[in-house]
Length: 231
Length: 231
DNA sequence: TCAGTTTGTCACAGATTCGCCATACAGATT
DNA sequence: AATCTGTATGGCGAATCTGTGACAAACTGA
Image 1: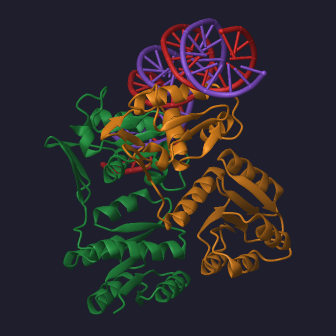
Image 2: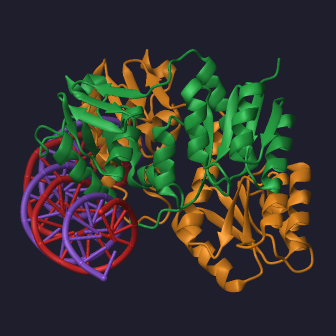
């Protein structure tokens, strides 16, 4: 009972490669090369997962995602261009389960497919709401609130907070944070993280001078307070 | 215990730059400028990762990759020209783990190297929790607790403790400890270790005067008590 | 284009940690 | 016991790390 996967991309070479890898990994694969046929294929083929290029002729990739989401909770992995921050955010807002930045390695793609499927069938309801005491992050709505008050964060601030909250207690170096939030292609010095942390604290901490959530680990980096710490 | 990386490229300037960045990032680097010597170097040097230019004189880069793959699962990062979609795809088919498009930023390359290595070794479950009786060290959270009580350590103290606990029972000289904790070429008086040990004991030992965990080996150095000793 | 955001960088102040010294203590050697 | 070598400790200035405000650059959306 191998799983079915729908691959939507208009570059023949990419499709061929991805298909080969996925089939080798034991999946059954269907392919669509444009938006309308993707939607059609999805309806008839009922895949367990969709891999979707955001750049499509005809119907835009985001639009395809929207239509699929309209009637299904199927996991979606987005393929995006390296630079396209805006698309990435938009994709996540639509509930993409993961995204892979082009150019990607086929190996990596397969391992992400496995990871996403594992998560999906693990019965774990997708974690789209991060909470810690009085702070709430809604990944779907891309919205943060503190004590019920909605707080406006910049993309960088939001990504930082979301990432840290997904690993409470764990310490990350500035480089790790840059990489997590900006991908491998970042071009800035790691101290720029300090500035973002500062701005973030000013927006979500009650007393930014004595932070309770976004904590500094001297000589290492930053972490989100683990539940115990917040007491 | 820094990782070895093999860089294969025929452009001297590129190699020089990449090597400088990688070494600064703490890797050891070997270089080859053509296919045959790349294969030879790979065999003798046994790197943890290979960075491979697809455009090589003599033996083609793809061929090099094929030969390396024949006997090894070592991660490979390909360097490709921007335009060459076909090569890119071919490279991935051979199981390259990532590829970087020329011209690339050296910084990006380094961070991709880190990412690929992290993924590669991520497979093996690594010991991220060190325990000994009542002392617990969580490497991820960068947190130490004694009898459930969290203890604040400075970076030096934390690194020392973590290192010693990873080799319980084994004795290290002060110089070895300095090197392990501060990296190879570190100049400082090895007696400074004494001070760190002292402060460490005061934080984690029940009776710092009669330590049970961080033990002195007279005339040699220090060790973490082996399980037997702690009884 | 232009105004308003967002982000990156710099410089400096404040906080923390480290290296090292002087000295006291402990273990080895005769 | 006397002596010598090695280790522990307290403390202080130097070195390192972080927080912050200011400003410039990059980016967005009208």
